[in-house]
Image (cartoon, rainbow, N blue to C red; front, side):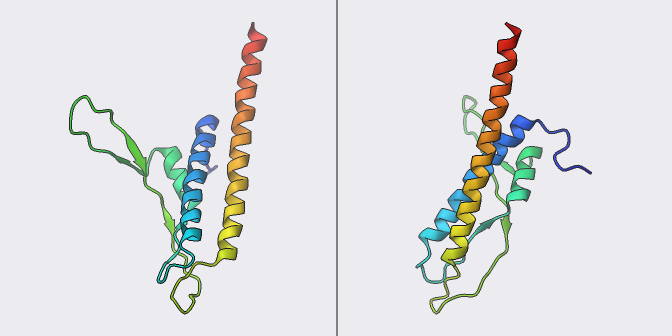
Length: 131
């Protein structure tokens, strides 16, 4: 089976950017807590979260209390279980690993954004040619 077969490319790119943005928050939180005793870093399972977002799973419906409220959804991220060795204060954050993850995630986000921009340019060029 081909991954993401039959999925709208624009939706895939948008969800990829959203998932990369969510991953950025987790990495930044891990870096911010590098000196916090007993802190365990959180890892986002990027592929599982992206697949769930594209397939429409992994979202929690937010409750509305009045009929006039707009129904909304919030992503439920999927986490990897990852526990490297800890220091004397039982903090398991490795700054070198976090910085490598940050760099990779930034590259992924930039790639998703560039592909989405290219897709919009293709649509724009097609519409201009129709005139």
